[in-house]
Image 1: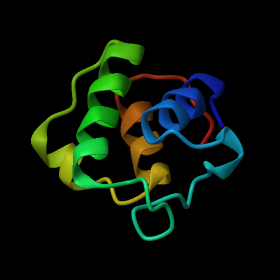
Image 2: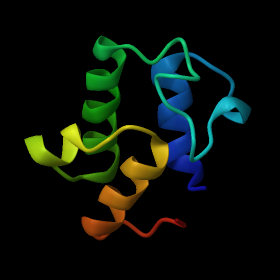
Image 3: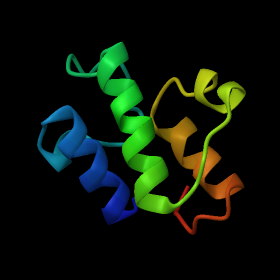
Length: 79
């Protein structure tokens, strides 16, 4: 997984990077609440120089979904 993305996620949720993987979601990460999710979106947008639209944000259920959207925005990231 992209090191920059993992670091952003770990910082936002205040967890160890080792806890972040494709299946990380609100169901298995207690720190993932609605407020932190919007902070995550903002940090990812700023970190990668992109802007999400509303439909994209509604499709994010786990980290794998976020990665797919980043690829769609031209970010080179391993799926």
